[in-house]
Length: 563
Image (cartoon, rainbow, N blue to C red; front, side):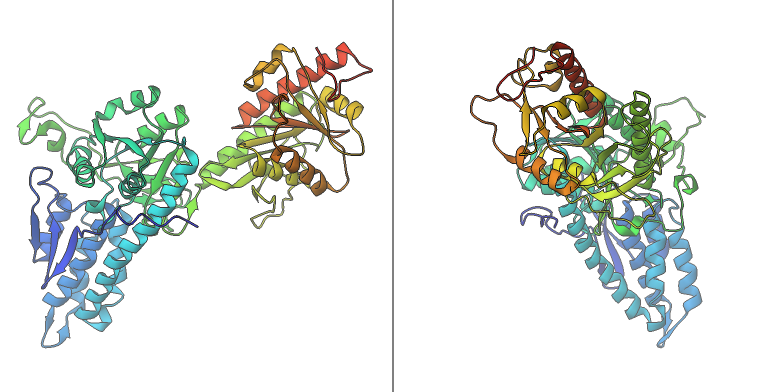
């Protein structure tokens, strides 16, 4: 269950509200120098406020649109009769004020559903949406904060964010910025790097103002310096919002987000999107169909009314860009932490590629062996190669989604997960692993078979091998590698593995290699990702090869060692 936001964090302070027949909003154009409220009394004024960015942020735009329809409904009610056609005409103008954010059209359509009940019913639906937005944000914030902590170092965090996703962009709490304030409320933020968000500087003007208001430490970051900040280790996680989310997980957000996602992927930094469920567009298969708003060249060629480019200079000024789902660690809404379909496709392709490489080594002959990888941002799930598939011909679709802790299949699919998934799950429960590889490498299998005993696990203790340094042990001069007896009942092997990994290392004993052997059944190795797991697998197999060469007839048990 997600953690409830802390009591002191994210106090609801409305950014827009209904006020005696008008819509009262914070004029975001005046910040940070002046906190000014706008009273919007006509649909024309509301549309202008949305287009001029006095009101901005996808959730806030949607809520303003809903209140605008209510305002129109009251304006077009005479002697108890509502002119529905006039209200629908106003609603169409409101919905088209900004084309990219799906929340606007969604909110307008929702309140129009109450039109038959009269103006008061429309207003009631709009006010309900305001309350819902606060509850929705609160739920998403709790889930997002918990996820961030599961993916980042156990210390106060350095967070990078783009544009403004706080209370100004919503009814009161915020999405990505609300998550940052929540983490700060838990004492877990060292610093926030705030992208300027050119050309209109929503980060420099609005996000810094909100962070200062909340007492959260921050520094303003030049947009083009964000990637360099990641390279210097100044960023633990990137948190952004969204204006539209396609079915495949592609996301439209303030321009500059795509570049951040590319840099985050290059530096293996979690890239997390926090947005309300209303931002999803179920009619949009992928991001290629998102209409990107292009704004006036003056926003680029002028700063505060002063020209900074030659007269007549043209400008490319898209307000948004599209981030492919495969570059997003997770999309968090009030309902769930979800992996974009494109990301799963990428991980499935990675499993297939690694399987083919190991097949070509002769370590996964035929259909034997299996690989699994946790889904980042969804640590409770893992993808594992399907049972009965030729490991030399796997595709991205030949992977099964399972519960990483139980090994149980969690999706409807004709594919089967191997019985050995139970061993993967045991490793995930007992070790800090992001990927597990099980193969039938010949020398590791030979050592396991020669060493095993029916009465329980034995331990091989390789010592003096230079290759032991490949495991990152504190003392690489010696190590322990368990050998488990094979059983037809695979869950019994899994139980033995979990018991071994959960037991403390004996005093004075060698550290444990992040791997294990099963008699007659190969080797299982794990790491933070598939690359690290494969590298460790190579080291285990090479050490076992040298052990066999050194003493083919007397492999060492726990009483001895191999050099």
